[in-house]
Amino acid sequence: MEHYKILNVIGEGSFGRAILVCHQNTNHNYVMKEVRLPKSSGASQDSRQEAILLAKMKHPNIVKFKESFEENGHLFIVMEYCEEGDLLATIKHQRGKLFSEQTIVQWFVQMCLAVQHIHEKRVLHRDIKSKNIFLTQSRTIKLGDFGSARILSSPMAHACTYVGTPYYVPPEIWENIPYNNKSDIWSLGCVLYEICTLKHPFQAGSWKNLILKICHGSYSPLPSQYSYELRSLIRQMFRKDPRQRPSANTILTRRGLLKVVKSIVVTQTDDELSENFPQDELASVLQHINEPPAPLEDGGNVINYKLKEQRKKWKKETPESLLNILNNADLTTAFKTYTIYRSKPSEECLKGPLSTDVRGPDATDSREEEISMDPERLQSRSDDEDTDFEEEDMDTDWLSELKRVTEAQS
Ligand code: ADP
Ligand code: MG
Image (cartoon, rainbow, N blue to C red; front, side, top):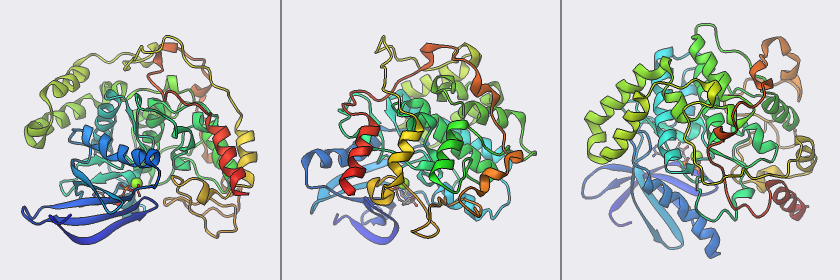
């Protein structure tokens, strides 16, 4: 700690604080995330996961880990400082002026490269959202905040209590099916939608309508200036069946993106990448993007982890039972990873940072003509093999855990 001079606090959350610091010897600025370590050793171990996972990631589009240490019951994670802040702030800054398709594609490809990297390492991020994606001074995308991430081989004792940020949570989570790498793809689709429209894809005035919109996949179409390629990408990333969603690999091998992908990977190789990006991984990325794209209908060019021959059967609950539980729940305290913006604490109204005015609880639902339903969502599953990997070893199911937490509160 004595090596760093504190400059200012740039983010504050339930975890602790994100502080801008300056290294005394090198004069370099870094972000230091200060995380209060819980008393129980199991929970402390969970907190340490963030540092462990971030340290494992070495990719030009992932926030670079410098070091981590513990002092006075706190864990400090020192990482690269992204001067331009988070993508959510950048979107808000636009004040309604749409980004060019070129910018969108450049950013999106970098996000996909980051997600491809973490999925190759069998890590799920589980909280992909514009607030956790950062921009450097040179406008390079960096995926950050590995506070909710999990590696698949680790014990998953607490995984079922995690919910994520409701706006970005895919239908399978509401339907009590475990999170898998395609769930990250859904959340990434939400970010892509946000940079195209400057709005959240699923907006509603109540919990009920938010969950129903997500589960039905109803969202307003993209502004007409954007290409068919972007429209079709979003449609595929928002497919209800996770197995029908493209993996990061499949997205990066799309014909429409290949040129941008190649140009980004090559530039990154020349610059910062060369010293810290292992050559074998670079070869693997290049190999993926040089492979001819496989048609999605055949299951796509996906990472196929054949660890489990038999897909686990999960007790499936309908969103209705979830909604009944949520009826009496004090959500803000029940789920620390929830980010819920309420206009007034007493109102049953959800407001995200990019929400447009929602007049009453059901106001958005009356504008059906603006909402596109995705017909592909009704298609039957094409390929059972297209489920890549998912959370393992969950002793309790997510819904039971949710019930337990809400009952404990009342
Ligand atoms: P939390 O778990 O609270 O979401 P984050 O790691 O996302 O923690 O950090 C909180 C906020 O601090 C971010 O939303 C962002 O505004 C700022 N921040 C975090 N890390 C960085 C970074 N490396 N560079 C710039 N800003 C950052
Ligand atoms: Mg965050």
